[in-house]
Amino acid sequence: MNDHDPTNGSGHERSRATSGGDGTPPDHDDAKRKRRDGPGGGLLMGRPFGVPVYVAPSWFLVAALITWVFGDQLNRVLPELGGLNYLVSLFFAVAFYASVLVHELAHTVAALHYKLPVRRIQLQFFGGSSEIEKESENPGREFVIAVVGPLLSLVLAGIFYLGMKAVEPGTVPGVLLAGLMISNLIVAIFNLLPGLPLDGGRMLRAVVWKITGKPMSGTVAAAWVGRALAVAVLIGLPLFTHSGALGTPGQEIGGMQSVTDALLAAILAAIIWTGAGNSLRTARLREHLPDLAARTLTRRAVPVEADTPLSEALRRANEAGARALVVVDGQGRPTALVREAAIVGVPQHRRPWVGVGTLRTPLPAGMRMPADLVGEPLLEHLRTTPATEYLVVEDTGEIYGVLSTTDVERAFVAAMTR
Image (cartoon, rainbow, N blue to C red; front, side):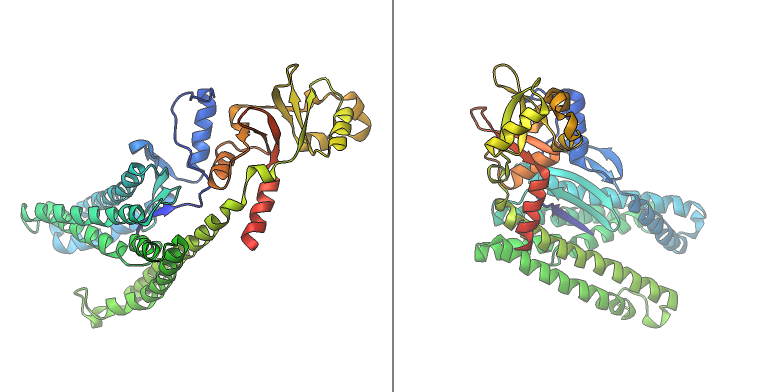
């Protein structure tokens, strides 16, 4: 299964190989890129168009299964191959997933064309996904990004068909090309089914979005069609197999194959059902993103110099009704924050003797954020530069306050429960 996956909008940072315009050193930039790509991606295979491509551990399980199943089929068609049939079958598995990668690259190139950042491509159990981090600006772009994947799979199926006609039937190249032609055709048709999280579901979402003018309406419609599709796959796939429509008479289908068909149907149905549910949750999340504004969530802060005793700094904060401390230099420019956890860690009786400078946390570029950040850009900033507190500043550079990630999380949970 293949789908392009707009994530929950928690970040859109693009990769940079060396120090960027913000003055961060290369090692800090590499760390940001690793955080952007996220943990658990699997084996990194490369970065076409600057987008990391990962192979998930589950891929090796499926590749082994494809090698075994296709190897048995080769043994019946080309018994003279002997033990080499599994080597040829392994080549088929790799070539098939190369086709899946091309499918996902089509989504990626289309998304990048529309200036939508792609977090990563992942090849995994039953296909792959392109994690597009922003929603399309209009339904037309959403439709284009969704449709290019299945279209390219159809093109690949046509190319393999022409190649199959150019070689001798019943040979290793002929069998391989036939298998790749059929598999790409199945990928294209399956992904055109009109339910999320499949590409056809994205296309249906775009159509409903265009008609109603509401992206959420499109998501709800396509997600429920996706859930109905999951039920249809769970019930219909085993029945379809037993009908003999695939060329195997129903009476020749044994008990083990029936179990395998049912298991395959259950896995596919679970993937589709879960993907549809995730799409609904993501859409609802995006609806509430405007409720997250740095300006309204920021704690008021008081500026203090590094040699100020902690007790005195806290007295000034209490008088001003502030809940945060910002360390400034002699000209009043912010140089560091005093984390709330660091303050709590100092016993009450020692606070008159501890200068705030000993508790300060330096302020690299990523820990400063504009006061006007709202929604997705705010979450992007938090994700690309993880910290517990951030200095919030006006466009003029004036200190506005300190933003705590705890406050953002609390506001986010409140917005989602409304």
